[in-house]
Picture: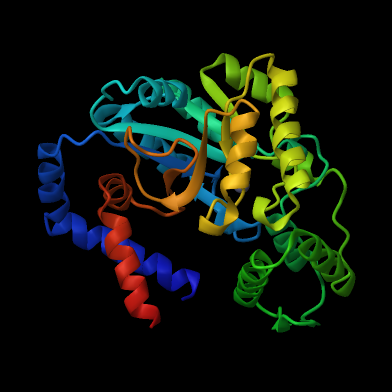
Length: 352
Ligand SMILES: [Zn+2]
């Protein structure tokens, strides 16, 4: 299903669920259920959606305006707790505050500092940012942003990538579709092969990725330190963001340990939280979990949709992803757990 249709369905879903009173009813039913649950939200970028942007716009989670609306809503209707506090409750098996929510960000984009941090400060909300340290050190930029940058910058209007097919880049819509299609195919292959294909794409489309591109896109260590003093905690998310089950165990260990040590060196405090790159069901296993346990991590988060309770495996914590253009009814439906069920059912039915 294309992105525009998906967005339209999401907007309609929000209007229907809000106007029908279903949201109100479900909120009331949920208030009767005293189950100990924690919802961990995951954001990536907080910035305005610019179609002309060279980077991957699909990773924008909210505009600053929508983000503020969501934070205001959380601060009056939910208990936003820090990740450390949540872990203390898991370890000590103590009662969680009702309607507990943890806010997280993945990768370490600069707009987390520019746009999200001032809003979090304004409402006094704690959050955790999982850093891919190689992005901050300008070793590399994310492969999804590289693909978007190459496609958006090229002057070619037509090309073929062996094994991937033929793409036309005459219109903006075709460009967005090409980016999405290439990204989906790249997700399924091994890390080394993925990097080789991106380099091939650079050659075919005659685009050179500037070496300092990461500086404008990712946090600086000074910004990380400032946020750390202002109530934001930091977790590790590897050095170069490989899917850990698609590299050797030694490489996985190196990526995990080096990113942890890098953040600890810059902040002067221990790092105990981890986020698996990509974070889907096949992106971690027991070996990876053992590496985390052996190296002082107390928990790890996934990208798999769901909530957690005190019995959840601390190395397999589920999260709920917030996406750009989530209206407040959609945002609340996600928090209440209805959105995922209805949306997944609809998508399965719609794509059959
Ligand atoms: Zn990530």
